[in-house]
Length: 101
Image (cartoon, rainbow, N blue to C red):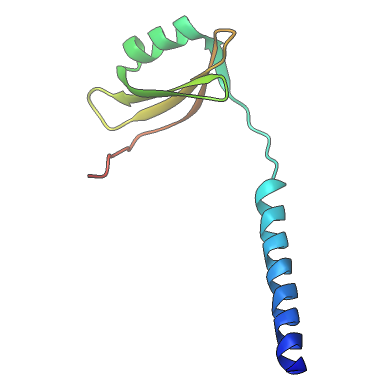
């Protein structure tokens, strides 16, 4: 009986250490990122007219407007976020994006 308790105790410690290690990797990972930002109206005009993209989706997250643009003639994409002060920043973009069906 005491061997079973000791086994459970060792397993519990191992699980605790694994979970603790995984949490530290997820919650304490920091990175420095630079964004290209401008006035929201200027960016929207630039993306729709010069880049020939249309907004196909949007949402709100932590007081930011998140917009998803896709190329009208190709599969390019751009994700833009806009702050409440009217500043918009390009988060990420690329040449290939496909919806899964």
